[in-house]
Amino acid sequence: MQRRKRMRGITLIELLIVVVVISILAAVAYPNYQEFTARAKRNEARAALLRLAINQERFYLNNNTFTAVLSDVGFAGSMTENGYYEIAVTAANASNFTATATYRHGGNEAGKCLTFTIDGRGVKTSSPDTDCWERTR
Image (cartoon, rainbow, N blue to C red; front, side):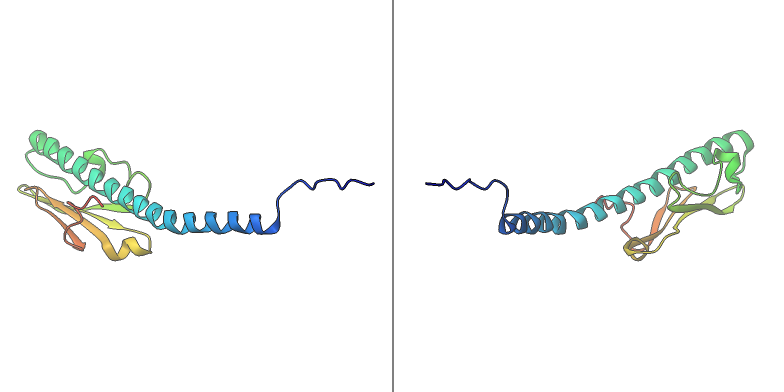
């Protein structure tokens, strides 16, 4: 009598089950990942504006006026560290300044937190959503 050898390996059904499970996990994880990266971009803009405000105060203590020149307050260029937001001082005089971070790319983020603004009095605004400074999720 001849004995049949036992086949080793995986079947097509087993492979399809693994692919379906991985697809479901990816469908759940990818939107969470996108929201996480959007929050990181917003945090980068907020941190840059807060750093600019602190440096503006230092500049004011030394020169008795605010400046509209980013290099005077320690910024090498007009972009945030990873280049998602563009920083600009839109108004500066002896009594106040206004700095704005504007999102430079498209996608969902452009519809949520397109601009962040801070002035010399510490007033923080954002648009189109008005709670972008406080929102952490």
